[in-house]
View 1 (cartoon, rainbow, N blue to C red):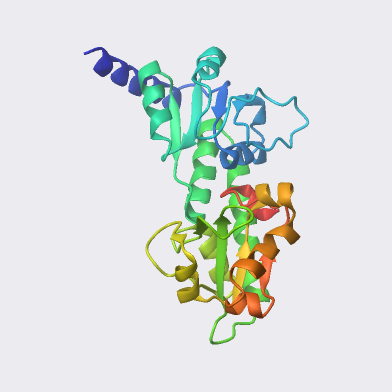
View 2: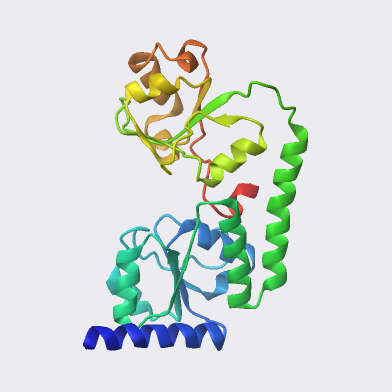
Length: 269
Protein backbone atom coordinates (compact mmCIF):
# COMPACT_ATOMS: atom_id res chain seq x y z
CA UNK A 1 0.00 0.00 0.00
CA UNK A 2 2.83 2.41 0.85
CA UNK A 3 4.46 1.83 -2.55
CA UNK A 4 1.16 2.46 -4.29
CA UNK A 5 0.68 5.68 -2.31
CA UNK A 6 4.17 6.93 -3.21
CA UNK A 7 3.66 6.06 -6.87
CA UNK A 8 0.36 7.96 -7.03
CA UNK A 9 1.88 10.87 -5.11
CA UNK A 10 4.78 11.04 -7.58
CA UNK A 11 2.34 11.07 -10.48
CA UNK A 12 0.27 13.85 -8.91
CA UNK A 13 3.35 15.94 -8.21
CA UNK A 14 4.59 15.41 -11.76
CA UNK A 15 1.25 16.52 -13.16
CA UNK A 16 1.16 19.55 -10.87
CA UNK A 17 4.57 20.79 -12.00
CA UNK A 18 3.84 20.13 -15.66
CA UNK A 19 0.52 21.94 -15.53
CA UNK A 20 1.37 24.60 -12.99
CA UNK A 21 4.29 26.90 -12.37
CA UNK A 22 7.53 26.79 -14.33
CA UNK A 23 10.10 24.70 -12.42
CA UNK A 24 12.90 26.80 -10.95
CA UNK A 25 15.11 24.04 -9.52
CA UNK A 26 15.79 21.19 -11.93
CA UNK A 27 18.37 18.42 -12.16
CA UNK A 28 19.68 17.08 -15.45
CA UNK A 29 21.14 13.58 -15.39
CA UNK A 30 22.07 13.57 -19.08
CA UNK A 31 24.60 15.69 -21.01
CA UNK A 32 22.24 16.03 -23.97
CA UNK A 33 19.42 17.56 -21.97
CA UNK A 34 21.87 19.86 -20.17
CA UNK A 35 23.06 21.07 -23.59
CA UNK A 36 19.51 21.81 -24.65
CA UNK A 37 18.56 23.62 -21.45
CA UNK A 38 21.55 25.91 -21.94
CA UNK A 39 20.76 26.35 -25.63
CA UNK A 40 17.26 27.67 -24.91
CA UNK A 41 18.49 29.98 -22.14
CA UNK A 42 17.08 28.14 -19.12
CA UNK A 43 20.38 27.18 -17.48
CA UNK A 44 19.61 29.38 -14.46
CA UNK A 45 17.10 26.71 -13.37
CA UNK A 46 19.71 23.95 -13.15
CA UNK A 47 20.39 23.07 -9.52
CA UNK A 48 22.49 20.00 -10.37
CA UNK A 49 23.97 18.16 -13.35
CA UNK A 50 25.68 14.83 -14.00
CA UNK A 51 29.45 14.40 -13.94
CA UNK A 52 29.51 14.11 -17.74
CA UNK A 53 27.54 17.26 -18.52
CA UNK A 54 29.40 20.09 -20.26
CA UNK A 55 28.86 23.55 -18.81
CA UNK A 56 29.20 26.41 -21.32
CA UNK A 57 27.30 29.10 -19.42
CA UNK A 58 28.89 32.09 -17.69
CA UNK A 59 26.84 31.18 -14.61
CA UNK A 60 28.51 29.18 -11.81
CA UNK A 61 28.69 25.45 -12.49
CA UNK A 62 25.86 23.63 -10.67
CA UNK A 63 26.75 20.84 -8.24
CA UNK A 64 27.76 17.56 -9.88
CA UNK A 65 25.51 14.74 -8.74
CA UNK A 66 27.30 11.66 -10.07
CA UNK A 67 27.37 9.56 -13.21
CA UNK A 68 24.53 9.55 -15.70
CA UNK A 69 23.54 5.95 -14.98
CA UNK A 70 24.31 6.02 -11.26
CA UNK A 71 23.77 9.50 -9.81
CA UNK A 72 23.91 10.07 -6.08
CA UNK A 73 20.44 9.52 -4.68
CA UNK A 74 21.47 11.36 -1.53
CA UNK A 75 22.41 14.43 -3.57
CA UNK A 76 19.13 14.31 -5.48
CA UNK A 77 17.21 14.34 -2.20
CA UNK A 78 19.42 17.03 -0.69
CA UNK A 79 18.98 19.40 -3.64
CA UNK A 80 15.15 19.20 -3.43
CA UNK A 81 14.45 19.62 -7.16
CA UNK A 82 11.14 20.66 -8.69
CA UNK A 83 11.85 18.29 -11.57
CA UNK A 84 14.50 15.83 -12.73
CA UNK A 85 15.35 15.26 -16.40
CA UNK A 86 16.64 11.90 -17.57
CA UNK A 87 16.30 9.28 -20.32
CA UNK A 88 13.64 6.57 -20.47
CA UNK A 89 16.32 3.87 -20.17
CA UNK A 90 17.24 5.00 -16.64
CA UNK A 91 14.55 2.85 -15.06
CA UNK A 92 16.36 2.34 -11.76
CA UNK A 93 16.48 6.10 -11.19
CA UNK A 94 12.89 6.51 -12.37
CA UNK A 95 11.80 3.95 -9.75
CA UNK A 96 13.70 5.87 -7.09
CA UNK A 97 12.10 9.17 -8.12
CA UNK A 98 8.65 7.56 -8.04
CA UNK A 99 9.26 6.26 -4.53
CA UNK A 100 10.62 9.62 -3.37
CA UNK A 101 7.69 11.53 -4.87
CA UNK A 102 9.98 13.65 -7.06
CA UNK A 103 8.63 14.95 -10.36
CA UNK A 104 10.59 13.96 -13.47
CA UNK A 105 10.52 13.99 -17.24
CA UNK A 106 12.05 11.06 -19.14
CA UNK A 107 13.05 11.62 -22.76
CA UNK A 108 13.80 9.38 -25.74
CA UNK A 109 17.14 10.10 -27.41
CA UNK A 110 17.81 7.72 -30.30
CA UNK A 111 16.65 9.59 -33.41
CA UNK A 112 17.02 13.12 -34.71
CA UNK A 113 13.28 13.41 -34.19
CA UNK A 114 13.83 12.69 -30.50
CA UNK A 115 16.19 15.67 -30.31
CA UNK A 116 13.53 17.90 -31.83
CA UNK A 117 10.80 16.53 -29.54
CA UNK A 118 12.96 17.03 -26.46
CA UNK A 119 13.69 20.62 -27.42
CA UNK A 120 10.00 21.35 -27.97
CA UNK A 121 9.06 19.77 -24.64
CA UNK A 122 11.75 21.70 -22.77
CA UNK A 123 10.54 24.87 -24.46
CA UNK A 124 7.04 24.23 -23.14
CA UNK A 125 8.24 23.36 -19.64
CA UNK A 126 10.32 26.54 -19.29
CA UNK A 127 8.10 28.86 -21.33
CA UNK A 128 10.81 29.24 -23.98
CA UNK A 129 9.02 27.82 -26.99
CA UNK A 130 10.50 30.34 -29.44
CA UNK A 131 14.07 29.57 -28.36
CA UNK A 132 13.45 25.83 -28.65
CA UNK A 133 11.94 26.20 -32.12
CA UNK A 134 14.96 28.26 -33.17
CA UNK A 135 17.33 25.48 -32.08
CA UNK A 136 15.33 22.93 -34.07
CA UNK A 137 15.50 25.16 -37.15
CA UNK A 138 19.27 25.51 -36.76
CA UNK A 139 19.80 21.74 -36.60
CA UNK A 140 17.55 21.08 -39.58
CA UNK A 141 19.25 23.84 -41.58
CA UNK A 142 22.69 22.35 -40.87
CA UNK A 143 21.59 18.90 -42.03
CA UNK A 144 20.00 20.37 -45.16
CA UNK A 145 23.19 22.29 -46.00
CA UNK A 146 25.19 19.10 -45.52
CA UNK A 147 22.92 17.12 -47.81
CA UNK A 148 23.15 19.76 -50.53
CA UNK A 149 26.94 19.86 -50.33
CA UNK A 150 27.35 16.11 -50.91
CA UNK A 151 27.44 14.47 -54.33
CA UNK A 152 25.96 10.98 -54.10
CA UNK A 153 27.87 8.20 -55.82
CA UNK A 154 26.79 4.61 -56.30
CA UNK A 155 27.64 2.23 -54.86
CA UNK A 156 27.73 4.15 -51.63
CA UNK A 157 30.72 3.82 -49.33
CA UNK A 158 30.06 1.51 -46.38
CA UNK A 159 31.13 3.06 -43.09
CA UNK A 160 31.27 1.45 -39.67
CA UNK A 161 30.95 3.78 -36.68
CA UNK A 162 32.50 2.36 -33.52
CA UNK A 163 31.52 3.87 -30.17
CA UNK A 164 33.09 1.44 -27.74
CA UNK A 165 35.94 -1.07 -27.35
CA UNK A 166 38.80 -2.05 -25.08
CA UNK A 167 42.00 -0.03 -25.50
CA UNK A 168 45.04 -1.95 -26.67
CA UNK A 169 42.90 -4.62 -28.32
CA UNK A 170 39.91 -5.13 -30.58
CA UNK A 171 37.75 -6.75 -27.89
CA UNK A 172 34.22 -5.74 -26.94
CA UNK A 173 33.69 -3.60 -30.03
CA UNK A 174 30.35 -1.78 -30.11
CA UNK A 175 29.10 -0.17 -33.31
CA UNK A 176 26.27 2.19 -34.19
CA UNK A 177 23.16 0.47 -35.50
CA UNK A 178 20.55 1.75 -37.92
CA UNK A 179 18.27 3.05 -35.16
CA UNK A 180 20.64 5.77 -33.97
CA UNK A 181 20.70 9.44 -34.93
CA UNK A 182 24.30 8.97 -36.09
CA UNK A 183 22.97 6.57 -38.71
CA UNK A 184 20.65 9.33 -39.92
CA UNK A 185 23.63 11.65 -40.21
CA UNK A 186 25.42 9.02 -42.31
CA UNK A 187 22.43 8.93 -44.63
CA UNK A 188 22.56 12.71 -44.98
CA UNK A 189 26.18 12.31 -46.15
CA UNK A 190 25.05 9.80 -48.79
CA UNK A 191 26.98 6.89 -47.29
CA UNK A 192 25.76 3.59 -45.89
CA UNK A 193 26.08 2.10 -42.45
CA UNK A 194 28.09 -1.11 -42.87
CA UNK A 195 25.95 -2.69 -40.16
CA UNK A 196 22.36 -3.14 -41.32
CA UNK A 197 21.06 -5.39 -38.55
CA UNK A 198 18.33 -4.66 -36.02
CA UNK A 199 20.45 -4.17 -32.89
CA UNK A 200 20.84 -0.54 -31.76
CA UNK A 201 24.48 -0.97 -30.67
CA UNK A 202 25.74 -4.38 -31.84
CA UNK A 203 28.72 -6.00 -30.17
CA UNK A 204 31.03 -7.23 -32.91
CA UNK A 205 33.68 -9.93 -32.87
CA UNK A 206 36.61 -9.96 -35.29
CA UNK A 207 34.68 -12.53 -37.31
CA UNK A 208 31.72 -10.19 -37.43
CA UNK A 209 33.96 -7.35 -38.55
CA UNK A 210 35.42 -9.54 -41.27
CA UNK A 211 31.93 -10.34 -42.54
CA UNK A 212 31.06 -6.64 -42.71
CA UNK A 213 34.48 -5.62 -44.12
CA UNK A 214 33.61 -1.88 -44.30
CA UNK A 215 35.26 0.60 -46.67
CA UNK A 216 35.91 3.01 -43.81
CA UNK A 217 36.02 2.63 -40.03
CA UNK A 218 35.40 5.68 -37.87
CA UNK A 219 36.02 5.36 -34.15
CA UNK A 220 34.22 7.81 -31.90
CA UNK A 221 35.99 7.15 -28.61
CA UNK A 222 36.73 10.57 -27.08
CA UNK A 223 37.44 9.23 -23.59
CA UNK A 224 39.95 6.68 -24.88
CA UNK A 225 41.46 9.25 -27.24
CA UNK A 226 42.12 11.57 -24.30
CA UNK A 227 43.96 8.88 -22.36
CA UNK A 228 45.75 6.88 -25.05
CA UNK A 229 45.85 9.23 -28.04
CA UNK A 230 44.38 8.64 -31.49
CA UNK A 231 47.62 7.22 -32.94
CA UNK A 232 47.69 4.42 -30.36
CA UNK A 233 44.05 3.56 -31.07
CA UNK A 234 44.74 3.37 -34.79
CA UNK A 235 47.71 1.04 -34.21
CA UNK A 236 45.38 -1.43 -32.50
CA UNK A 237 43.81 -2.05 -35.90
CA UNK A 238 47.14 -2.50 -37.67
CA UNK A 239 48.10 -5.16 -35.13
CA UNK A 240 44.75 -6.84 -34.65
CA UNK A 241 43.00 -6.80 -38.03
CA UNK A 242 45.41 -5.97 -40.89
CA UNK A 243 43.29 -8.07 -43.26
CA UNK A 244 40.27 -5.73 -43.16
CA UNK A 245 39.71 -3.62 -46.27
CA UNK A 246 39.62 -0.36 -44.29
CA UNK A 247 42.89 -1.21 -42.54
CA UNK A 248 44.65 -2.27 -45.77
CA UNK A 249 43.53 0.91 -47.51
CA UNK A 250 44.53 3.17 -44.62
CA UNK A 251 40.94 4.21 -43.98
CA UNK A 252 40.77 4.10 -40.20
CA UNK A 253 39.72 7.44 -38.75
CA UNK A 254 39.85 8.37 -35.08
CA UNK A 255 37.56 11.15 -33.92
CA UNK A 256 39.37 13.88 -31.95
CA UNK A 257 39.26 13.73 -28.16
CA UNK A 258 37.11 16.87 -27.94
CA UNK A 259 34.41 15.62 -30.31
CA UNK A 260 30.96 15.37 -28.74
CA UNK A 261 28.30 13.12 -30.20
CA UNK A 262 25.47 13.72 -27.76
CA UNK A 263 21.94 13.54 -29.22
CA UNK A 264 21.43 17.24 -28.55
CA UNK A 265 22.20 20.71 -29.82
CA UNK A 266 25.86 19.57 -29.77
CA UNK A 267 25.28 18.29 -33.33
CA UNK A 268 25.34 21.94 -34.46
CA UNK A 269 28.91 22.25 -33.21
